[in-house]
Length: 344
Image (cartoon, rainbow, N blue to C red; front, side, top):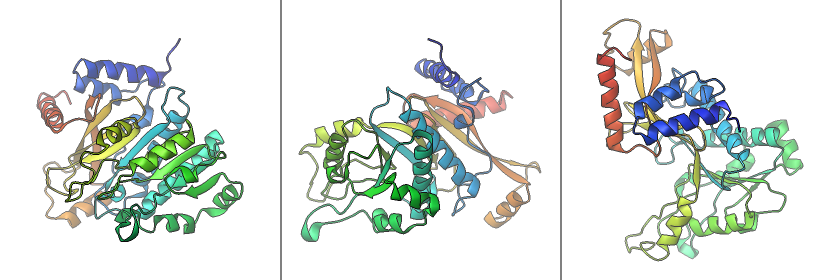
């Protein structure tokens, strides 16, 4: 059977990755491939992700890329029902103090509307409830109050109409909130807490969904051990097998110096679609005045607003799995070598 452009591009990149040709795979991603990934395989210029809140351009790109990946996976008959979306610019990373829950809620609203418009499927949006018992019951700080905010946020007239027709509904993580009317489940940032794993609730939900797609956004399903070693061994093997069954359909995260926060941003890792390689990007700043130096961040921001300073992300490597720290260093070193040789 004939392959579409995106599938052909994906196959060529997988072959290049399998041969250890990370740089060549990156250039395939950056190439204008007929019917290929197109903009999904590129990062836009001038996102300036150090700015909080993020620019409308950056937010729109993350939303569009996430939606495309989800729609692609939902249309793929070979895709598993357990799907994971990782989108972590600074304001969407629950581990950082720059995390903005409003941005996550806006993202899931956009996803729900597009899934309904494009597929006609009913969407249930889920937020985990407290885990544990009595005084030991707890909820991750990043999810505190999110269920209520989700229901109180402005869904507009379109959202109100969809809710009235049961196309958008809310729920918790677990079998109790799985209904035969639901077609797609979206879970916001599910995560374990000290002494309690989210995995059993997800297992119940997956079983009750009976093959219907469940999509986690920025999930952290690994165990969080307590000082007493709770969750160290008992059932850990089964939990790890369950976590491994979730397939990532989109990934975006930043590369920063070890031990620092999100400054300076060295690059990013992006996997645009299910089955595509992980692309490593190098972040570059291009100034209209050669060798110009900025005294501080205020001067730099003023230059960017004036159009004298621009930012771009250049793919320098592609990998079958998320690149290790060693692979990232080698790719950055090779990219610098190519610049010196005048190839880039």
